[in-house]
Image 1 (cartoon, rainbow, N blue to C red):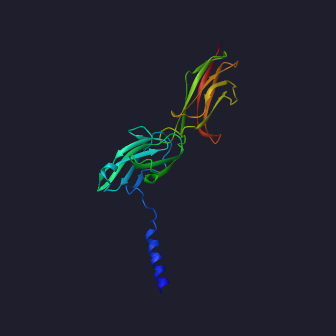
Image 2 (tube, rainbow, N blue to C red; image 1 turned 30 degrees about the horizontal axis):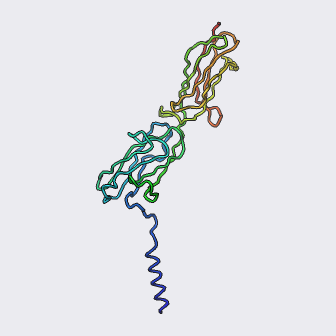
Length: 244
């Protein structure tokens, strides 16, 4: 009976010392909410992010730091912003807006009371997947409608790509520039200083010049490539080859 008593006491002591799962170490931040967990990487979409903190938190701990691995918080236009929580329906809420990056991938968030960033156990972490912004349209614009046959005479071309919502596509989207005769045969002109992937402006660019080819119209075509394969998203412009 004596041994049974010791075993019961040991079990009670051990159970009292066991930490509950999912314990919030800070006792301040209760959770967060992100309005859209699969936005597209168009560099313009904004998300609402809120952090709920303990309604009885000390007033000195109600300033919450929001930090992101990429993208920017608004209106700070930075990867870090500090928001003072205020009461909403008897809850202390800190809220801000986040503008997604133009590069797809994971975005990691960190939320913590101001002045406590060095203590890892006070940080609430979250993440979301930013999906690729895929082209639905492409518009090719030349700097001129004619080019001389002489070597060195050139025009510049810019391709603007947009998704189905007329927003930017993800940075790094690849295109192919080609020159062809009306019968479909390649011209063999020179593309120079080509950037065949989009940047933050959602454009790809190149310069184009000719050698000794017959006068007349040619086509410059730009096509969106998906995994290096041509797609149906393309545009062409007519360039007139004129004598020297």
